[in-house]
Image 1: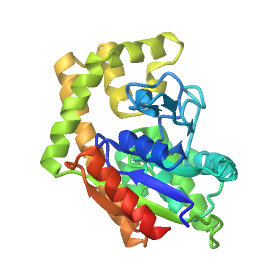
Image 2: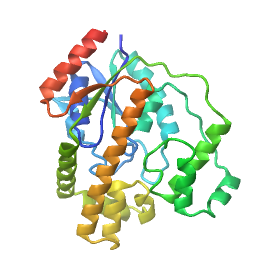
Image 3: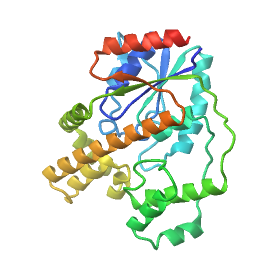
Length: 304
Protein backbone atom coordinates (compact mmCIF):
# COMPACT_ATOMS: atom_id res chain seq x y z
CA UNK A 1 0.00 0.00 0.00
CA UNK A 2 1.12 3.61 -0.48
CA UNK A 3 2.81 4.98 2.64
CA UNK A 4 2.89 8.57 1.43
CA UNK A 5 0.69 10.95 -0.56
CA UNK A 6 2.12 14.14 -2.05
CA UNK A 7 0.24 17.25 -3.09
CA UNK A 8 2.49 19.52 -5.13
CA UNK A 9 2.24 22.31 -7.67
CA UNK A 10 3.36 25.86 -8.29
CA UNK A 11 2.41 28.69 -5.98
CA UNK A 12 -1.22 29.86 -5.80
CA UNK A 13 -2.77 26.57 -6.92
CA UNK A 14 -4.62 25.63 -3.71
CA UNK A 15 -2.35 22.83 -2.51
CA UNK A 16 -3.02 23.28 1.21
CA UNK A 17 -6.80 23.12 0.87
CA UNK A 18 -6.66 19.88 -1.12
CA UNK A 19 -3.99 18.33 1.11
CA UNK A 20 -5.84 19.02 4.34
CA UNK A 21 -9.15 17.72 3.01
CA UNK A 22 -7.44 14.57 1.73
CA UNK A 23 -5.68 14.12 5.06
CA UNK A 24 -9.03 14.47 6.83
CA UNK A 25 -10.61 11.74 4.68
CA UNK A 26 -7.64 9.36 4.80
CA UNK A 27 -6.78 9.83 8.48
CA UNK A 28 -3.57 11.60 7.57
CA UNK A 29 -1.12 14.15 8.92
CA UNK A 30 0.48 16.93 6.87
CA UNK A 31 4.24 17.26 6.39
CA UNK A 32 5.04 20.64 4.88
CA UNK A 33 7.60 20.70 2.06
CA UNK A 34 7.95 24.47 1.93
CA UNK A 35 11.34 26.08 2.43
CA UNK A 36 9.93 29.13 4.27
CA UNK A 37 6.94 27.84 6.25
CA UNK A 38 9.41 26.43 8.79
CA UNK A 39 9.93 29.98 10.14
CA UNK A 40 7.82 31.35 12.99
CA UNK A 41 6.17 34.69 12.36
CA UNK A 42 6.41 34.35 8.58
CA UNK A 43 2.77 33.42 8.06
CA UNK A 44 1.03 35.51 5.41
CA UNK A 45 4.05 35.84 3.14
CA UNK A 46 4.64 32.09 3.11
CA UNK A 47 0.96 31.19 2.69
CA UNK A 48 0.65 28.90 5.70
CA UNK A 49 -3.16 29.16 5.50
CA UNK A 50 -3.50 27.52 8.91
CA UNK A 51 -7.27 28.01 8.82
CA UNK A 52 -7.38 25.23 6.22
CA UNK A 53 -6.20 22.77 8.88
CA UNK A 54 -9.54 23.09 10.69
CA UNK A 55 -12.11 20.78 9.06
CA UNK A 56 -15.53 20.05 10.59
CA UNK A 57 -14.28 20.82 14.07
CA UNK A 58 -11.17 18.69 13.65
CA UNK A 59 -7.60 20.02 13.57
CA UNK A 60 -5.45 18.26 11.00
CA UNK A 61 -2.02 17.57 12.54
CA UNK A 62 0.89 19.19 10.71
CA UNK A 63 4.66 19.03 10.87
CA UNK A 64 7.68 21.14 9.79
CA UNK A 65 5.75 24.40 10.12
CA UNK A 66 6.81 27.03 12.69
CA UNK A 67 9.81 25.05 13.89
CA UNK A 68 12.68 27.59 13.69
CA UNK A 69 13.18 31.30 14.27
CA UNK A 70 13.65 33.73 11.35
CA UNK A 71 17.33 34.34 10.76
CA UNK A 72 18.16 30.66 11.28
CA UNK A 73 19.58 28.82 8.28
CA UNK A 74 17.29 26.01 7.19
CA UNK A 75 18.19 24.00 4.12
CA UNK A 76 17.32 20.84 2.25
CA UNK A 77 19.71 18.71 4.32
CA UNK A 78 18.00 19.80 7.56
CA UNK A 79 14.59 19.28 5.95
CA UNK A 80 15.43 15.71 4.97
CA UNK A 81 16.74 15.03 8.47
CA UNK A 82 13.54 16.41 10.02
CA UNK A 83 11.38 14.49 7.55
CA UNK A 84 13.11 11.26 8.56
CA UNK A 85 12.08 11.94 12.15
CA UNK A 86 8.40 12.67 11.63
CA UNK A 87 7.65 10.25 8.76
CA UNK A 88 8.07 6.99 10.74
CA UNK A 89 6.32 8.51 13.76
CA UNK A 90 3.21 9.19 11.66
CA UNK A 91 3.27 5.64 10.29
CA UNK A 92 3.58 4.24 13.82
CA UNK A 93 0.34 6.02 14.68
CA UNK A 94 -1.24 4.23 11.70
CA UNK A 95 -1.81 7.58 10.02
CA UNK A 96 -1.01 8.49 6.43
CA UNK A 97 1.75 11.07 5.84
CA UNK A 98 0.58 13.70 3.34
CA UNK A 99 3.40 15.88 2.03
CA UNK A 100 2.27 19.29 0.80
CA UNK A 101 4.43 21.92 -0.81
CA UNK A 102 5.95 23.54 -3.83
CA UNK A 103 9.67 23.51 -3.01
CA UNK A 104 10.86 21.13 -5.69
CA UNK A 105 14.22 20.58 -4.05
CA UNK A 106 12.56 19.53 -0.78
CA UNK A 107 10.07 17.27 -2.53
CA UNK A 108 12.78 15.58 -4.56
CA UNK A 109 14.84 15.05 -1.40
CA UNK A 110 12.03 12.77 -0.25
CA UNK A 111 10.69 11.30 -3.48
CA UNK A 112 14.06 10.89 -5.20
CA UNK A 113 15.26 8.66 -2.41
CA UNK A 114 18.81 9.89 -1.95
CA UNK A 115 20.20 10.63 1.50
CA UNK A 116 21.73 14.09 1.43
CA UNK A 117 24.98 15.04 3.09
CA UNK A 118 25.74 17.88 5.46
CA UNK A 119 28.14 20.21 3.70
CA UNK A 120 30.77 21.96 5.85
CA UNK A 121 32.00 25.48 5.19
CA UNK A 122 34.94 25.65 2.78
CA UNK A 123 36.88 28.76 3.82
CA UNK A 124 39.45 28.51 1.02
CA UNK A 125 36.75 28.24 -1.66
CA UNK A 126 34.78 31.08 -0.10
CA UNK A 127 37.79 33.39 -0.15
CA UNK A 128 38.15 32.68 -3.86
CA UNK A 129 34.45 33.21 -4.56
CA UNK A 130 34.28 36.50 -2.66
CA UNK A 131 36.52 38.03 -5.33
CA UNK A 132 33.96 37.29 -8.09
CA UNK A 133 31.02 39.45 -9.14
CA UNK A 134 27.47 38.17 -8.75
CA UNK A 135 27.27 37.64 -12.53
CA UNK A 136 30.45 35.54 -12.43
CA UNK A 137 29.13 33.56 -9.48
CA UNK A 138 25.83 32.79 -11.24
CA UNK A 139 27.72 31.75 -14.38
CA UNK A 140 29.95 29.45 -12.33
CA UNK A 141 26.97 27.90 -10.52
CA UNK A 142 25.03 27.38 -13.77
CA UNK A 143 28.00 25.54 -15.27
CA UNK A 144 27.88 23.07 -12.37
CA UNK A 145 24.44 21.69 -13.31
CA UNK A 146 20.83 22.17 -12.21
CA UNK A 147 20.17 24.43 -9.24
CA UNK A 148 19.33 23.00 -5.83
CA UNK A 149 17.13 25.99 -5.16
CA UNK A 150 15.75 28.46 -7.66
CA UNK A 151 16.48 31.37 -5.29
CA UNK A 152 20.20 30.59 -5.25
CA UNK A 153 20.88 33.09 -8.02
CA UNK A 154 19.07 36.02 -6.38
CA UNK A 155 21.31 36.53 -3.35
CA UNK A 156 25.12 36.65 -3.24
CA UNK A 157 25.44 34.63 -0.02
CA UNK A 158 23.02 32.01 -1.35
CA UNK A 159 24.95 31.75 -4.61
CA UNK A 160 28.27 31.25 -2.82
CA UNK A 161 26.75 28.63 -0.54
CA UNK A 162 25.20 26.84 -3.54
CA UNK A 163 28.60 26.66 -5.28
CA UNK A 164 30.11 25.38 -2.03
CA UNK A 165 27.48 22.62 -1.86
CA UNK A 166 27.86 21.69 -5.52
CA UNK A 167 31.66 21.51 -5.18
CA UNK A 168 31.35 19.24 -2.14
CA UNK A 169 28.89 16.94 -3.90
CA UNK A 170 31.18 16.58 -6.89
CA UNK A 171 33.96 15.39 -4.60
CA UNK A 172 31.70 13.27 -2.37
CA UNK A 173 28.88 11.84 -4.52
CA UNK A 174 26.10 9.87 -2.83
CA UNK A 175 25.75 6.58 -4.69
CA UNK A 176 23.25 4.61 -2.64
CA UNK A 177 19.59 5.30 -2.05
CA UNK A 178 18.63 5.30 1.61
CA UNK A 179 15.07 6.63 1.56
CA UNK A 180 12.35 4.21 0.57
CA UNK A 181 8.85 5.58 0.19
CA UNK A 182 5.92 4.22 -1.78
CA UNK A 183 4.36 7.51 -2.76
CA UNK A 184 1.39 8.63 -4.81
CA UNK A 185 2.01 12.11 -6.13
CA UNK A 186 -0.71 14.53 -7.17
CA UNK A 187 0.06 17.82 -8.87
CA UNK A 188 -2.30 20.78 -9.37
CA UNK A 189 -1.87 22.67 -12.62
CA UNK A 190 -3.52 25.68 -14.26
CA UNK A 191 -3.27 27.26 -17.67
CA UNK A 192 -0.40 29.75 -17.55
CA UNK A 193 -2.66 32.78 -18.06
CA UNK A 194 -5.04 31.67 -15.33
CA UNK A 195 -2.17 30.99 -12.94
CA UNK A 196 -0.77 34.48 -13.52
CA UNK A 197 -4.18 35.97 -12.69
CA UNK A 198 -4.41 33.86 -9.53
CA UNK A 199 -0.94 34.94 -8.42
CA UNK A 200 -1.70 38.65 -8.87
CA UNK A 201 -5.06 38.36 -7.11
CA UNK A 202 -3.57 36.45 -4.19
CA UNK A 203 -0.73 38.94 -3.80
CA UNK A 204 -3.22 41.79 -3.45
CA UNK A 205 -5.24 39.73 -0.96
CA UNK A 206 -2.19 39.02 1.17
CA UNK A 207 -1.22 42.68 1.26
CA UNK A 208 -4.78 43.50 2.33
CA UNK A 209 -4.55 40.81 5.02
CA UNK A 210 -1.58 42.53 6.65
CA UNK A 211 1.52 41.17 4.95
CA UNK A 212 3.23 44.57 5.23
CA UNK A 213 2.57 44.62 8.96
CA UNK A 214 4.00 41.11 9.22
CA UNK A 215 7.26 42.25 7.65
CA UNK A 216 7.37 45.34 9.88
CA UNK A 217 6.93 43.11 12.95
CA UNK A 218 9.79 40.89 11.83
CA UNK A 219 12.05 43.92 11.38
CA UNK A 220 10.99 45.30 14.75
CA UNK A 221 11.82 41.94 16.36
CA UNK A 222 15.49 42.57 15.67
CA UNK A 223 15.98 41.09 12.22
CA UNK A 224 18.12 43.20 9.92
CA UNK A 225 16.72 44.09 6.48
CA UNK A 226 19.37 42.00 4.74
CA UNK A 227 18.43 38.99 6.87
CA UNK A 228 14.80 39.27 5.86
CA UNK A 229 15.58 39.95 2.21
CA UNK A 230 17.57 36.70 2.22
CA UNK A 231 14.24 34.82 2.11
CA UNK A 232 13.35 36.34 -1.25
CA UNK A 233 10.06 37.18 -2.95
CA UNK A 234 7.58 38.82 -0.55
CA UNK A 235 10.15 39.41 2.18
CA UNK A 236 12.72 40.92 -0.18
CA UNK A 237 10.44 43.41 -1.93
CA UNK A 238 8.28 44.37 1.04
CA UNK A 239 11.42 45.03 3.08
CA UNK A 240 12.77 47.22 0.28
CA UNK A 241 9.49 49.16 0.32
CA UNK A 242 9.54 49.59 4.09
CA UNK A 243 13.12 50.88 4.20
CA UNK A 244 12.43 53.26 1.31
CA UNK A 245 14.33 51.60 -1.53
CA UNK A 246 11.15 51.11 -3.58
CA UNK A 247 7.86 52.98 -3.76
CA UNK A 248 4.62 51.02 -3.50
CA UNK A 249 4.01 50.72 -7.23
CA UNK A 250 7.56 49.53 -7.93
CA UNK A 251 7.35 47.05 -5.08
CA UNK A 252 4.06 45.53 -6.24
CA UNK A 253 5.11 45.30 -9.90
CA UNK A 254 8.52 43.79 -9.18
CA UNK A 255 7.16 41.36 -6.61
CA UNK A 256 4.31 40.27 -8.85
CA UNK A 257 6.74 39.63 -11.71
CA UNK A 258 9.14 37.77 -9.43
CA UNK A 259 6.37 35.44 -8.22
CA UNK A 260 5.31 34.72 -11.80
CA UNK A 261 8.90 33.82 -12.65
CA UNK A 262 9.17 31.68 -9.53
CA UNK A 263 6.02 29.74 -10.49
CA UNK A 264 7.48 29.11 -13.95
CA UNK A 265 10.67 27.71 -12.38
CA UNK A 266 8.58 25.49 -10.10
CA UNK A 267 6.77 23.97 -13.10
CA UNK A 268 10.11 23.37 -14.82
CA UNK A 269 11.40 21.59 -11.72
CA UNK A 270 8.33 19.32 -11.53
CA UNK A 271 8.70 18.38 -15.21
CA UNK A 272 12.32 17.52 -14.54
CA UNK A 273 11.24 15.32 -11.63
CA UNK A 274 8.99 13.43 -14.02
CA UNK A 275 11.87 12.90 -16.43
CA UNK A 276 13.82 11.39 -13.55
CA UNK A 277 11.12 8.81 -13.01
CA UNK A 278 8.89 10.40 -10.36
CA UNK A 279 5.31 9.93 -11.51
CA UNK A 280 2.90 12.79 -10.92
CA UNK A 281 -0.88 12.50 -11.41
CA UNK A 282 -1.83 15.95 -12.66
CA UNK A 283 -5.16 17.52 -11.74
CA UNK A 284 -6.79 20.39 -13.60
CA UNK A 285 -6.88 23.24 -11.10
CA UNK A 286 -10.13 24.53 -12.60
CA UNK A 287 -11.99 21.47 -11.29
CA UNK A 288 -13.95 21.87 -8.08
CA UNK A 289 -12.44 20.76 -4.79
CA UNK A 290 -14.86 17.83 -4.65
CA UNK A 291 -13.82 16.73 -8.15
CA UNK A 292 -10.16 16.93 -7.17
CA UNK A 293 -10.84 14.87 -4.05
CA UNK A 294 -12.75 12.26 -6.04
CA UNK A 295 -9.85 11.93 -8.47
CA UNK A 296 -7.42 11.48 -5.59
CA UNK A 297 -9.67 8.90 -3.93
CA UNK A 298 -9.86 6.80 -7.08
CA UNK A 299 -6.11 6.84 -7.72
CA UNK A 300 -5.38 6.07 -4.07
CA UNK A 301 -7.90 3.23 -3.94
CA UNK A 302 -6.50 1.72 -7.16
CA UNK A 303 -2.94 1.92 -5.81
CA UNK A 304 -4.00 0.25 -2.57
